[in-house]
Image (cartoon, rainbow, N blue to C red; front, top):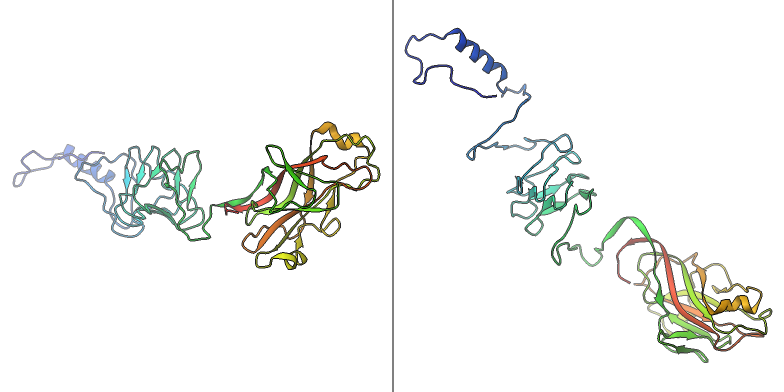
Length: 352
């Protein structure tokens, strides 16, 4: 819509007359003019502004986006805030940049703020950029959310930082499950008959009932440990049979960090309710050759059913291993090489 003068270039002369064409033009212009009254109006075309033109929104909610993408920008810095919370939205996706850096913070802290979930939605990589500390802040759960790969991205070291104090960890909306394999940690001391052998320093069993304790300092704080897998190999074919042999057994327990020595072991809390005093025995496969398994790697699952939410601030965690012993056992046959903790609920990235 374009308005044009209906009169002569120098203006109407005294007692000048309006012709029908001029009156018709005024009538049409009036019909398509923007109504500035409280009744409001609807725009049907594009408004182009010169460098001197402005839309001055001097009151709260002067400009409201009520549909996804209602306010878009097609140029870098096309939407810019120069005051704290200068750009806000009350609709998910109400402000949506379509190009990289389509929304910038204007160079001030908290220049862009979201106070509702999905309040700021970057539909393209680098759609929202901040060039100052605290340039983008979210004051509600899910206030800043990326729905596309690269929607939130840091291109510099330290670009994303946690500043909420000692317990401010990266936290997952849904707890994660994870299993990772680690070498059997070196014991603080080797029990009688036990040995560390090979480049990987696997624990070699003595074929006695001597318990070997192994510290578990790598467990994930705050996670739920559902199982601990013991990876081992049997290096002797046990040709004499294993019918009456006592199979290896393992246990996992915790004790309070403030208690050491015998009192600590006496008050140990096992992580499994099954088995004997927290110990679970390996299954006897019935024959020496089956137990040998060609010397290949085998695995035993220790199921954790209690006391298994890891709390490294309060407790130390220890695994106990008893090797095979008795009739048919072979000293030095069994190698315990690695452990695999299986977590079913990791809430955050708290360090061990």
